[in-house]
Structures are given as C-alpha cells and as structure tokens.
Image (cartoon, rainbow, N blue to C red):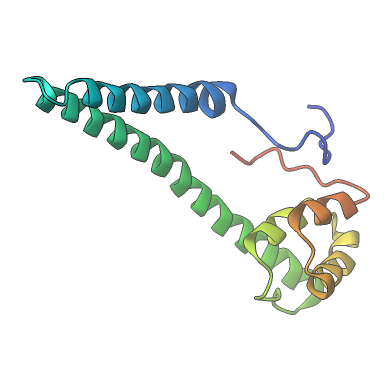
Length: 143
C-alpha cells in the first residue's frame, strides 16, 4: 500500500459515488417528467408508482450509506477516546465533534496531545487538523 497522507486519504468508489448517484438522480428526474407527461392520461397511476419507486430507491441508498457511517463514527470515537485515555488517564474532551475526532485519528501518539489542545483552543476544522499532522498515521481499515 502507498503511504497515506492528507492529499490521498479520501476514498471515492466511482461506481457508488458517481455512477450510482447519477443513475438515481436521472431516474428521479425521468420519473417526475413521466408524471408530468401522464398527468391527464389513463397512465397516471403507473407514472406515480414509478415516481414512488424512484423516491424509495433514492431514500434507501441514502440510508444504506448513512447508517454504517454512523456506526463507523461511533467506533472511531470509542477508539480515539481509549487512545487518549491511555496516553493521559483523562477522558477525551466532550466538546470535540466527531469530525474533529475522526481527523485526530491520523495523528501519531506523540502529536496527538498537543493537537487535541490546539483543536480545543482554536476550534480547528477537521481539514486544518489533518494539515497540522507532521507524521501521518494511516487508516486503511475505514470504509
């Protein structure tokens, strides 16, 4: 595996992020157009059912992606809270957002404590936290 850093740590799956998103959006638009074209015909019920299916599939794809992300966020919060506790014998500051905690996971142990303090003091954004890391701690297990 190549070394992970700020420039290459984000993972896009083209089939999911681009193709599926495009197909879902196109299907929704076509279903809306179909309802408009069938508005005063005997085929309106069929057009409305197709629109209902398009909306249902769009919502399903949204939730199928968002639920595992929530679970992953909980795991990251637990892992980083434990790591911080091991290093300091103190709980992680509850004011840190999950975005900040997820960004801090890339910091090695020797950079974590000062970076947590800086994040709390300056309310750093996740990208600013990642840019401040000198020796990137790769995370190849995320989805």
